[in-house]
Length: 158
Image (cartoon, rainbow, N blue to C red; front, side):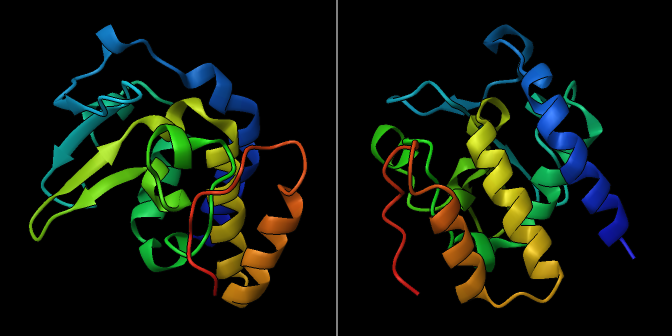
């Protein structure tokens, strides 16, 4: 039932993502990645968005919530923006969520400024919701980003 909303948000994401960036003074910064300066913010659950998304477009918020609900998928999908080396990310999931505690989530604002991160997550989730097997999603992402992008995060082979 939510799939049509997600698909519309995914389509709008490419157009609006670049316009939704904020500077650090507009965020409620709780902690940060010392290597990159990315903001990390903890909330009580995956259903509670961080303050750094409060001024973002609705589609950005929707994608962050979708990522939080697709952890198993996105932990198997590499990112090709260079964050594996610069931010020690191991998958596309790490671009959105830094840590999952037993009673909390620590969000990462990295993806709010990275079109590759956003596109990889949106495409992977969309394909998964269409019933595409994980191996095929992974193969499609690897193929789409094999040239002209950074080395992939060190995501384990499927």
